[in-house]
Length: 202
Image (cartoon, rainbow, N blue to C red):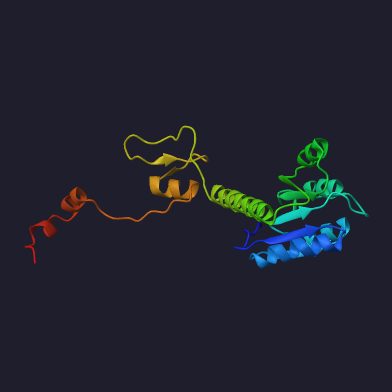
């Protein structure tokens, strides 16, 4: 089950340069996010398996494996394929950005960066993730009736897939997420309980 991002957001930072980790972690935590810095690609993969983050900030040049390889492995796993990955790198060549996006990255920030820009991009992708997960959750709860539904023209019961005839309310409750609140409309009250209509108003 996918957990919606917390209000601040849990962000995994992956970089083998301690100073880069320190700067990004401090920036995020001062602005209400939870930062989890790790220094290798392997530790990043372990961290994601242990506690999937809401967003990953990923360096490209690392000693044990490149950010490209980390991203590729994340996107190959069901538990991590939908986590947004933003590359943060000193590489400015178009080919690097094309490769990053081709592997499934959602954004690319070049160093040196403006703090306000990083924060704006982080919040944008967290909001997009929240919106997507909200939509997925809503769609999972929706059942839609499609096609032709056989209904008796006299008693108005509906024939189900097994050939049995059911009341409309039972059929709809079985095939959708709708529930019914039963009552009587005024003409039915008058026909079924005429004696109530003769009682003087109090």
